[in-house]
Image (cartoon, rainbow, N blue to C red; front, side, top):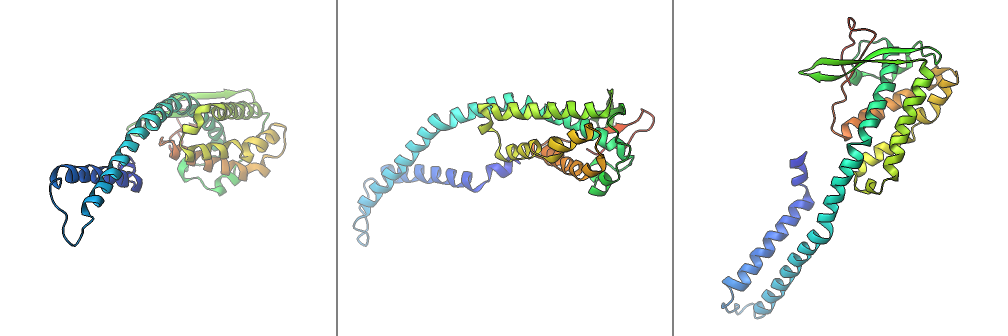
Length: 255
């Protein structure tokens, strides 16, 4: 990823122009300073001075940009990383895991989470907002093995979904209210915006909590799952976690 960024066309062109500018100034001012232009190019001296002035102007512009734009922008991006990426993004990730953990638990499938399809969500059974929540969510792995599992409990599934939905919406709202949001990667901001406006969070969870048939919202559940996968890829985090009814019957890890 870093190598790809370093070799981007814009960066390559920037460093090529820097090199050409220094080389041209060196040749014009030190190597060819007392050299007469060839007869076939009588304006060689004037042309050399023009090239020299353009190169100096380019280097001055680079220095000006570095001081006035690059350094403050770098500082603001660092602040955005601390104030948004390390604060709010983990919260969205955490609460999304809780919601998807419940949905995955209700599937009663042994598929890994990254292998889920729309059909798996269509087959979700037993989602009753009045029932309690009780499953284990494992999200700490060493060498591919689960080393920590947390019990997830709530009085009923409806309030559980509402609670974690509101936590996600609050974190996203605080992100977009921050003036630092403009320094966050635009692709990540786009994905966060899609999560914030997805039908599952805004309509489906409210309807399920009110006792409406969850069957009509299973497609929205799948779309939320797709956004979660897209989100984890954008922040370059492994999306592994495991859901199981107890410690003796683990479901294979996938997220």
